Every structure is written in structure tokens, then in C-alpha cells.
Image 1: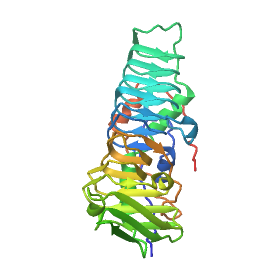
Image 2: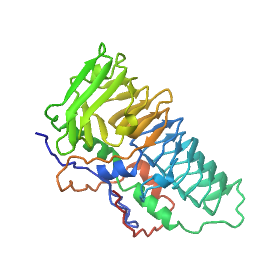
Image 3: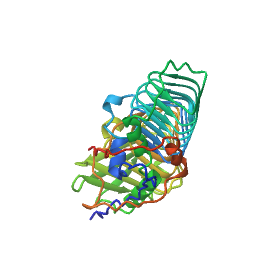
Image 4: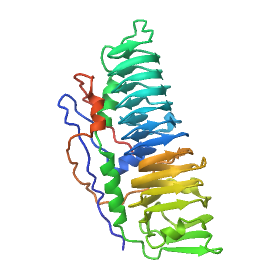
Length: 368
């Protein structure tokens, strides 16, 4: 019998009295709002289809390739707690950068920069808490000081309502806690009775078998993960009768896979790979599902795509991440754990600098 456990998620609320933040996101909200969530740093040479949150620094990459197919949210298209640079491009829904922006191009949407902005382009309104130098902007701009900018009277007197909303959302949730709590809770689930893993073709093909109970399948791979994620595996196959939610639990520290995943596109929205305790997970070919590496680094090498989402401590992205939002249901009771109010992370504290008194009174819309 499958253990049904609540997904208790700790969350962060800003302590700033001048601002009422959007409510913290649950694990389900995270999977639906974001294509990528990284609690640490992200390095990219490729693109992300949907919305991205990064708690640390971002270097490179293109974000929100398909804004029209991205779920509505108070979050910007790209939220960065630290610095953003290295030719970052945001194609829709704006950006929030807690630190400095250098070499950032926001093609659509409004932006807020908590530090300085240089050699960047913002096609919509932009608020820069620090100095702005050599910046192009499409509508209006605010900065503590200006250098190499032709203002033409387009000075923003106060943050816009959109900026208030995206800034409030950016500090509302401790995603490190959300990732860790989700991984821990999923790891505690018992394997579905009758699940099995078959190795064939001299252990080159791995086939996952199971029959869902109320749409849910749980695989315990902790005794097999090093064999599945190995250089000898060439193909993954799935026989998941009646399953709308499939969870794979592993516990190895380092995992590498370069196998064909022919059903990546068709299964991406229903699978969750919970790499609990992993320090490094690397895939060398296209991979499908929601990838959870709460305490480690996920890398997709050689230009290989992920059909799903990535939720990790750190991300090295060398292939596209295609938005396939999770459509299953997380095992939970009817009630989720209460949010825990704690001081906001230092990296996100920069987001509130230089804004003044912000009157954010809207509440986060829940999307399903």
C-alpha cells in the first residue's frame, strides 16, 4: 500500500513592513509556475521555454521562449537573486535581478534591478536601484545615477504595479526549502506493489513495469540506480499502465546517463525523477520528466534536451529545456503544512533596496 504523506513545505516571507508579499508557493505551485528553479547558480548556453527562478547568479542563456504558453503568475519571466550577465536574454514577462545586471537583454516586459545595470537593454520600463551606464531602454527608466544614456525625458518616477508584483513575489518563497522538503517527502513513499525493472539486451535496455493505484506509481530505485544510470545503459523503456503520476526515487551521490529516452516527450509531464541526496546528475541524451536534484548539480551535456522541468541546487545547461508542466498529482493529504516565517535570504534582500515605500496589495493568483 502506498504511503500517502503530506508535502510539508517551509517557506520564506519578507520581513519588510512596507510591503505585503505574495503568498509562498507550494511544491505543486512551483511545478506549474516554473520551467526551471535553481536555488544556487545557473550557467547556460541554451534556452528555457518557460519561467525561471535562480536564487544565486546567472551566466548566459535565453529564457521564456514561449511567453504565451507560460502559466500566469506574479513572478517575472526570469527572477535572479544575485547577479545576471554573460549575455542573458529574456524574451518575455520581464525580469527581477537582485544584484547587478551586465550584458542583459530583456526583449519584453518590465524589469527591476536591485544593483547596477551596464551594457544592457530593456525594451520595457526598468527600475535600477544603483547606477545605470550604457543602457538602452524602450519606455522609461529610473536609476540612482546615469552614464552613457540618452534619457529624452523618459524618467520613471515610481515603480509600476507590475514591478511591485514581481518584486513581492520574488522574495515570497524559500525555494531551497521547497525543493528539500519535496525530495524528502517523495523519498519516504513506499514503492507501488508489483513494480519491477527489467534489464535486457546484455543489460543495455532498461524497462520499467508497473500498474498504477489511483493513477500513482512509485519506483524505489535505490538498489538499482548505479546500474540504471551507467555507461552500459543504451535505452530506457516504460510500461506504466494507467499511471498519471510516476515517481522514481534514487539515492546515489553521482549519476550519469547517456541512454536513448524515446518516450521523453510523451511522458515528460507525468514523471518525477527524485535524485535524493545526489551531488551530481548528468544526462548526455534527451531526458523526460521533472528532474529534482534538491542538494546537487544537474547537467545536460552535448546539447541534449530536457522534456519537462529542472528543479535543482545548481544547473549547468548545455541543451534546451522544453516546458512540459507537471500534470499529475503530488501524493498529499488534504492539508499542506503551515508556512514558516523567517528572515529573507541575503541575496534577495537586495531586491528591496532603493524602491522606497511599495504598496503591493494584490494577492498571488493560484494557477492550476
